[in-house]
Length: 173
Image (tube, rainbow, N blue to C red):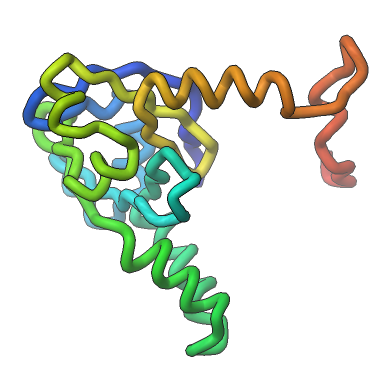
């Protein structure tokens, strides 16, 4: 994929669970949808991953196809393949961006991120967080708490150390 999902965007979620996909993310979704005809790109929302995971991971159709191919190469019936099938295939949904750049968050997705009917009554907010090949959707308060917690535990680097030193050496660089 030439484009990446990058940045974080806070988006209002209305009472009908509609939310706008950030424009930069829509461009990546369009590029990653082989069926895109100029109007309504599709993508896959994965709400599996266990109860500790408080976000939904979103894949372009092309990226999901690559993941599915990797799962298909695994021996059928193994515990690992079953876990991957359940969490990435069964507990997922393909959605389509409407002509206004919005989606309706499916009920299972709302449940996963904690955007209950009660929360939607009070002008809920979601955060879209880019992670290169995918993006995540979080309830705003959970995202902020996770970012604060990660600052505390992310790395044991000495004060002032360069984060780029964490990258593995690549002879092609």
